[in-house]
Image 1 (tube, rainbow, N blue to C red):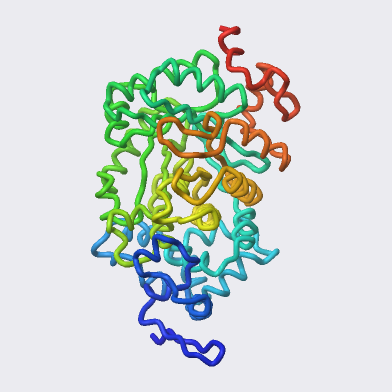
Image 2 (cartoon, rainbow, N blue to C red; image 1 turned 180 degrees about the vertical axis):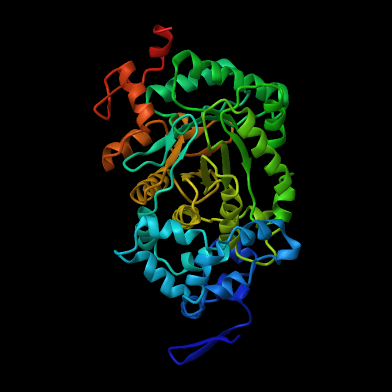
Length: 456
């Protein structure tokens, strides 16, 4: 296949699809370190012209890692709905973009088509989109789920209550949970990142967070973001687990660096369906982020956007309750500044929804990234316009355990007011019963964690 075009009197030719996809991408510092970026803006445009003319079948037949070498590839390829695929395989990538953006293309049409897509096809069309394209197309797609409550319903914006603590103090974390709940954060999940990943410590945090949920009859779920093997042990020993968590990579080698495999995730999913206490049917929580495969030398020479799309193809196998890209967490080696973080956040959110999974975002940055809180608030506004399911709620937006900056307990209520959105309906009804919310707005008693101590 000849991958060549003329632009302003100059000829550009690309040796293979892998190189073409890398050079068509918006520049990311990780891809530059890996030698995968265009040498100039003109070459990037030329790559996009060539990419736009490729039929979708070419991208399906050129996975980032060959089928026989990689179980993530096998999961994605084996899940393709062949009947729908045969209807669209001859569309060009550019034509697919136009179809996604057309006013006549509905959520139902996109959701049907998503069952025929591979990650490389999704990544390809993403590379042709502007930021506004990514917002507009993602806005069309609604992917909901249910665990102990609903997620991703039209007109809603949820918030993960993230009460991390540098010593895993149960009482300190309980206080942080109360503060988050007082601001209406927690309808996505009460999700704790543990310092100590051991079974005993994780089980203790599960018991404490479940006690809060049970005592106050909160329509939400808990999760301790420990390794999936620890969560499996907790399930087998009767701990109250709401969601089972794991970080994902987009290649088998990348997942091996996380100490996981498809077989292990299959086993965890089976245990979750059997032992998680919520009604379900969605029990899994995954996190991703551009650059993890590059950092593990597990990208097989492909750019980080493609590998990120493959994470979502793997996540879809487990019908998750929620997935979020921790977009700025890995650091400036992979996303250098606010512009790159914002672009990646919009890309990831769109790709997740186009894959067909309930997608949120940790709009965040590390302290050595060229970004600030204004940049992250800008990204949160853009993602809310795009229909993002949920954001993080971190005390003061400063995670004292993970040492990074994210959205605060205050931000989701502000974004709800700005866009006319509400919490998950079950959670809003609970807030209203307590007097913390009325007609979709927080009341004057909201924001005071001592409310829960006075009412005990």
